[in-house]
Every structure is written in C-alpha cells, then in structure tokens.
Image (tube, rainbow over all chains, first blue to last red; front, side):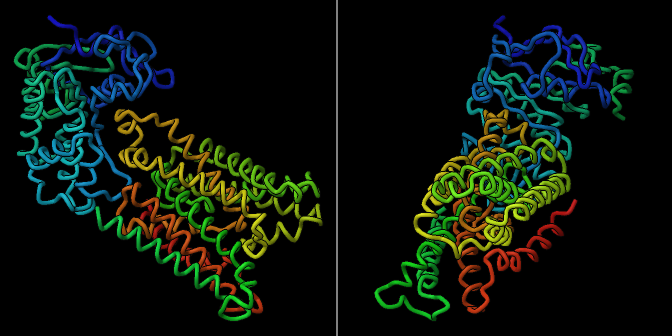
Amino acid sequence: MSNPLIQCRQLSVEQQSSPILNDINLEVFSGQSLAIVGPNGAGKTTLLRSLAGLIPHARGEINIRGKNILNISPKTLSEFLSYLPQNPTCAWDFTVRDFGELSMHPDLFEHWISRFKLNGKLGSPLSQLSGGERKSVHLSLAFSVLGNPLQKILLLDEPTAALDHDRALLVALAIKEFTEAGAAVLCTTHDLPLAQSCKEILVLDAGRVIKKGSPNDILTADLIKLIGNK
Amino acid sequence: MRNKFGIIGWGFLIIVSVALIALAQGSAGFGWGKDYELLALRLPRVLAAVVAGFALGIGGGTQQGLFRNPLADPGLTGVFGGALLGIAIMMASGGTWVWENTWAISVAAFAGASLISILLVIVGGGGSTSKLLLTGLGLNAFAAAGTLIIANLFSSSRDVLLSGITGDWLGLATLSSIMWPIGLCLAASILLLVQARALDQLSLGEEVAQTRGLDVNSIRRRGIILTALAAAAATCLVGQVAFVGLIAPHCARILIGPRHKFMLPLAGLIGALLLLLADTLGRSLWPQTPLSAAAMTALLGAPVFIWIASRHHE
C-alpha cells in the first residue's frame, strides 16, 4: 500500500489545559473517504482543525503526505489541502462570481456551481441567497480550489448541514468522485446517510477513538444512539 | 470588469475636475489671481487634501478588511488620536528643532499611530464589533487627553495642536511642509493596494484564509503598520479627521462591489473627493469664518455612521 496522505500518531490536543483529543492514531490514504462521527463535544471539529494545521497539538504528530505538518508552510499546505469550516462565512456581500475569482480554478468552481443548480445566480450577492445556497457556494469553492484531486486532501466540517436532500446527495456523490480520482476526504457529520456513503467511519467520544471500520460494521443501533441521531 | 475600471476612471476624472475648481475657489472669489499667485498658495492645500483623503479611504478600507468590520475607521479606532499624541510629544520635547526638521513630525505621528494600533489589536482585536469600537473610543480619549495636557503645559505649541485636534491643518500647508507626508501617504497607499487579494481571502475568515495559504499574522501586521503609516501621514497634512475612512469604503462597496482590488482604489478616490469637497466648501461657504475640513466630514459622516451601525448591529 502507498504512503498515507494523512497520518496521526498519538495526537493529543488541549485547550486551556483541558484535553480535547486524546491519543488519536489515524491513517488516511489516497482514494479513501472517512466520516468522523460522534456526539456534540466529542472533538470532531478539533480533529479536523488540527489536521488543517489551524490549532497546535500538545503531544504526538501529524504527518501530511509524509511530512510533519509543523514543517509545512501554509502556502505549501494550501496546494494540496482544502478545508471547509462548519459555518463558513463571508464578511462582505460577495457575488457568487466573486467566489469563483477567489478560487485558483474558476472554471472548476463554475462546474460545481452548475451542479448545485446555482448557475443562474452567478451575479447574485450572497445576501440574496438562502442558507443552503450560501453553503453550496462555499462547498463549490472548497471543491474547486485544489484543481486535480489526485493525492489531494479535502477536510469538510459538517458539509451537509443546512442543505436540502438533493444537495446533500450531491455532496455524498462529490466525495465519492473525489476519492475515485485519488483524493483523501475526511468529513465530520451527524448525517447518517452521508456517513454511510463514506468508505470508513471513525467514532469519537470524549476526545478518544471508540471505533473505526466500514459503515456496515460501525453503524449499530447503540452507536446511532450515541452520536445523537434519531 | 470593464465597467469597474470605467467607474475608477470616472472617479479619477471627477477628482481632477473638482481639484481644478478648488484651486480656483477661495475667499477672494473664483479665479487664479494675477500671475497665478493664488494658485501657488492654494496648490499645497488642494494637494494635501487629495492625497490625505486618498490615503484615508484606502486605510479605512484596509482596516475594515483586516477586522472584517464595516465600522472600523482610523479616526474611530483612535489611530489619528495616537498620531496627534506622537506629534504633541515631539513638539513638546523637540522645541524649535522640530520646525527645522519637519520629517520628525511624520516619524512621531507614525510612532503614536502604531502604538495605538498595536494596543487596539491587543485589547480590542479578535472580539465583537462593539469591543473593537469601544476599545478604539477609549484609546482615542486617552490619546486626546494626552495631547490636551501637552497643549496646556507647552504654550508654544498650544495653538498648532488645538487646530490639529479640530482637523484644521490644511490651511497651514506649504509645499515644503507637505512633501514628507505626501510621500509617505502615497507609499503606504500603494503598499496597501498590493494587499487587496489577501484581504479578499481574509473575508472568508482567518481559518479559511490560512488554509488558502495566507500567512494571516503577517498580513495583519503589515496591514496595521501600513494603515498606521497612512493615517499618521494624513494627520500631518490635515490634523484629526474622522469618518473619511469610514464613508469612502462604504460608498465604494455600493458603487463597485466588495472585492478589494476594485473597492480600495475607488475608496481612495472617494476619500480624496470627500476631503477636497469638505475643505473647499468649508472655506467657500463661510469665507470670513472658514469651517475645518474635519467639521465638514463629521457633518456628512456622522449620519452615515449611524446608518451603517443600525444596519450591522449585533
């Protein structure tokens, strides 16, 4: 098997001396999609932010494409890692087209905008879009900034939150397409159909990995209760 | 895209036209006088107003972009107050030496503005709009108190400092006194314009900007220092003048959209137009008792500030 695109060894993260993540070991390879599930406060977002190089870790190490994340500059990391926060915002009333110009690949951005059925709204400012449409614009940007997905990493924090059924299905399909094209995709989610569509599921609780495996092995009735899905 | 360049082109033409009118308009009436002597007198004043307004528009737009806050303005966040305090300390400690070395005034203004900017980030940055503005107001009051105490203790510089507090220094402009601040205003403005793309990425939040390859801390440090430089140099030209840095970017966003590569240059042009109009109207409407440019911009700016605040309240 090739080297993992993401590797965590005994990763621990603390905030104000309180442990948020404890002893996380994880490997994600090219072509793999991993859904991170767990109850609120389990540390899902913290794990994703750590992997994006946004927060320091207290112990352990994170290697991205074989190199310690501490030795990778933000500019280099941005060439192969895309991150979508849980509640993406924009300080100003950009139009959808403006977002395309922020992407390094405006054509690819428009491709995703079209798949999210927003191609008639390229000139519309964000303030005239619904919450789900705004989320779709941020998703299109996250999907398009990396160009060719081969050996790239996509980190998505609750990507289907605020989306309707069709757009949520499109996100699941996009994750499948990215992994088939050679990317590694990690997403946190409370959306069980999205978790089921990923190749593997990792269950976090109180900052620790409880289980990791294929959706069929992982999604038992007890676990669904634990992650708070009804 | 072509429309946007067109708007900026029109803005430039309007500035040139209004500047020509401002050069011809004075308390002695309309015209350039015999042998153009009035033109020579008014040229430094008009140049100072245009360049200071340009720097304030761009500085305000940059500060709003850095703080992701439409209410940020170097005047409201205390940066002008800091610049003026720096000038006051230099005047009090330098005596006549300062007037022989006018570059020292620009350096002192920059030091004061930078100090207040750094305090603003340490105490008020990273929080809510209210926290930032209240911190700025507090720092401004502190700096104003310092300037007033110095003006009170050192009678030799009292009149100059008091007219600086009321934004009334344009009338003192001479070609030799404005050279340094104009150079600094233009240099800071050009360096701030280079940051436009980074400010666009920062619009999406610091974390997303960082994962897009931006060194957020470095961009913020550079932006704050350059904004302090622009505000300090503008203070040396005009004195304390609030609201230009607030109104200009707001109008620019309405006219051309929020992308910084278009918004910042247009904010600069609108800032230049605002300050030039304020100064020209202030000295033309009441020729016997001319009103300072700062008073005119406050008359225009205060209602706009209230309007923006009511739209963006938390």
